[in-house]
Amino acid sequence: MATRTATKPSARERLLEAANELFYSEGVQTVGIDRIIEHAGVAKASLYNTFGNKESLVCAYLESRKTRIQDRILRTLTRFRTPRERLLGVFDAQGELFTAPQYNGCAFVRATAEAPDDSSISRAADDYRAWVRGLFTELATEAGYADPEGLARQLHLLYDGAALSARMDRDPSASTTARAAAAALLDAAPLAEPATTSPGS
Amino acid sequence: MATRTATKPSARERLLEAANELFYSEGVQTVGIDRIIEHAGVAKASLYNTFGNKESLVCAYLESRKTRIQDRILRTLTRFRTPRERLLGVFDAQGELFTAPQYNGCAFVRATAEAPDDSSISRAADDYRAWVRGLFTELATEAGYADPEGLARQLHLLYDGAALSARMDRDPSASTTARAAAAALLDAAPLAEPATTSPGS
DNA sequence: AAAAGATTAGACAGATCTGTCTGATCCGGT
DNA sequence: ACCGGATCAGACAGATCTGTCTAATCTTTT
Image (cartoon, rainbow over all chains, first blue to last red; front, side):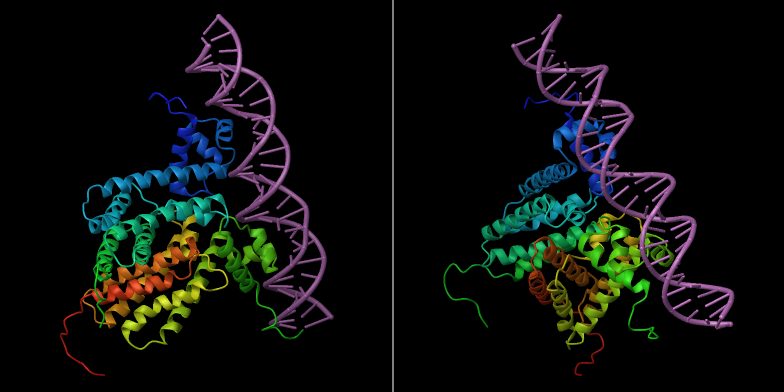
């Protein structure tokens, strides 16, 4: 509750930091508890007192990653004015992630690949994906497109594909490709009709 | 008794079949050797005589999956005539995969998420991705687009995104969304200038 | 029929992992 | 100063995993 001074982060914070580095770079299953506590400089009892078990630590790690990514995207979007620019700006924010020291793909995809099907880890991934989907839908609605949900689904595909390609192909330029494709989709998507007939033929 | 061919598959085939089911549905790390041999009805020594170690078994499993998917896609593409239909037909083939009994996402993405960075597993994934990329590039070239590689990259993003969404969102209709987006990208992509004209068939 | 090679069941070794427990030590609030 | 909670180091139990090895049984070839 009391805010820590800058001298020494709490055991919880150090554990989350270590989890963030090790789980993300090497995978959830391959990194054992011992490596986490060694890297965090924390006793094993502190870990189990704080989180209870490994799965809860993984969920907390995913949660912290989610808020970090959300903040990063939203901050990047403040640079853009028009709804269209902001829709495409999501891919710019993604590109910044790709060029980070070493990007290893979507943490939620990786963690889900290692977790049983109906675990709390999958639920954390669902949360994150719902947020991304909601963001695209909201921006598409603001931009006045006729089918914001459908457009958001298409853009989400590009967003996922870019993250996957950036990792699997070790190609950070995937976000640029995705942005260009997204621009083409926006150009092709019909706007909501403020009034008269639809443009057929 | 004297029948030696069709009645009983070899130990290798049964192991690959078991690996295909268990590794794909539950993950590579979480499924142990004991589960594999039990499910295959094979002795442990046979597994290690045949494959040497677990990683080789995983690679063989990925290899068999790759050829299976390639066959499926190519067979589906024979239904279509024009290059454009065949480009979009890749997403139809993908949709058939999604509606399979239980689809669990791209096996290569899952396996790579659990494997160390420079393993032979990653290399198997690279092979598969290179094939998909080459297929899109080839079809885009046949269709006469000005920038086949660039278009193939965009379509590959949709392909990856659809596979990822089908798994993460448990939404097999992702291939339909991807197909629609791909059609829009094809409409927007410029055609190559016809250097040598051989117009009609 | 007999030899040679596969295949089987399962014990075993060695390593590793999660989670618990003990007791000592540090540190902030009253 | 003191007390209670947080944290520490590390041993320990119990389970699990990969890979090896033995010895018996089945299959094929000579």
